[in-house]
Image (cartoon, rainbow, N blue to C red):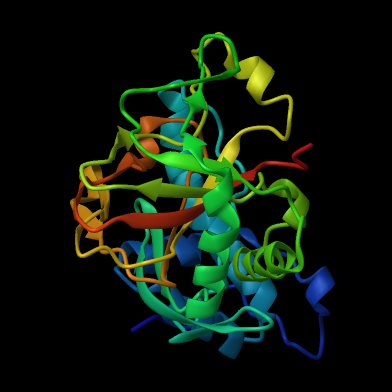
Length: 302
């Protein structure tokens, strides 16, 4: 059980005495968070204790996120890795069973901190899944990947699917889904690439890979001019294959089963394998698989 932050000098701020905008995150509070987290206290209990002591909930959440990330960032930078950047993130600090996405309520099925993975149920309705497939089917072509040497696109033997991209907001259906995604992930619509739909036939797969752009590749500076690095991925299953086709995270030893309307989100605060976001689409064994993918960028994607 979390100790109360008021047990530490100068850490209690009365809600009547200080507005949320002026509540400072004191050194004592920072140390208290580190001590409690080191003792194995979960985030919801820490936030509850801070709120009981008078801290505004938004300030408590921000302080917790900043402090728990700082030790990891320090180690990473000592190893020559780039500093972490802000990433999309659903509001899950109270461990809700349901997440309000504005026009739809989504089920929270699984969360993982390292790597940051969130599995969601019922993000799209069956009718929306069918409508996306119908709109995408006439426009499908062999899927391409980013050409890391040049910044363009190329056919890659590791990706044996067909695909297409919708333009942001190109139809009422796309606009509604994008607004729902933005609400879910607390990330601006304009910071997302166009929604991509992919079709995997029996035997098709996408071998494990990272979604960020490798800073060591010569084509990366050209790619990141449009919106900066990728910092998160939301993958939605538009149908349920008979067998196979799961999304695998080898470093986490996790496989997410494809179920129509469900989604898996993962984020990566730096373009580094240390994010443990290596993932792939397992081969489809029977039937076929349709998915929609939204990649999130650091800033506006033009």
